[in-house]
Picture 1 (tube, rainbow over the protein chains, first blue to last red):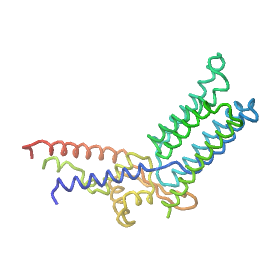
Picture 2: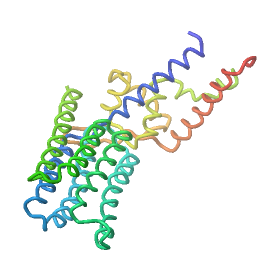
Picture 3: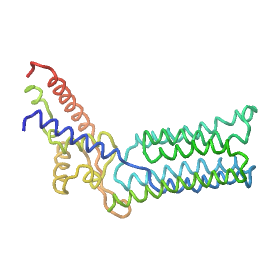
Picture 4: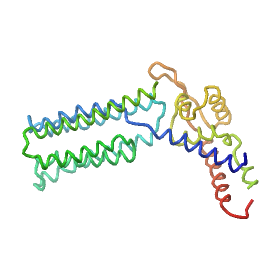
Length: 191
Length: 104
């Protein structure tokens, strides 16, 4: 084999190894966690609307911290630790939380109706999951599409009874489905 | 081209060792079993290549328990990072020269 051919083969081997390492996915537990948080977070709008803000002020950051812990634990278990990826994830999901917080001045100055906040949050979620799917884990892409669909559903179906409970249930079911796929994939790679 | 070949790092010339060094330059720490999974090498072969990198001072190993199982974590050293950069620079030059006509 010539040197040239040998180099080419070696580099293609290195490339394939690096590509394999990039195929790390979110652990199932994070999807299940957010399936639960999101269901109650949206259903509460129908049943205890006054408590919604308080719920998200507590559940949002707590869920974020729990996700970081679960993600770090999964990375240790998979045997692949990247601080750089961890910081990128923090910046990505932290930006979503920050964008949601930036809605507060819109509401306090009367430029956005309180009822529209959950809709706008769905739109922010859709964008964050979609960009997360492009950057980090492809499994987030269909979730981004579901969230964008739910955003439209809450506009055109605004007269439906229990609109937010239905929205929360669909959102929760799609997150749980992503979790089931993630768990199945993890089982396959463990086997 | 011959001059450039002589500049290549002998330790990193082996593709498995090169792949390990590239992976460790990208990720802070990788376990032995994860490296085995990624490189598709046998325990013995991977172990020998890692030992060679360790002997050259390119990687360090730390052992700890994860879920009550012993895990060997590998990380690249600054010497290893420098060696990898120099090796990749030579490779890049060789590749760019290979594309030019009439050069040896």
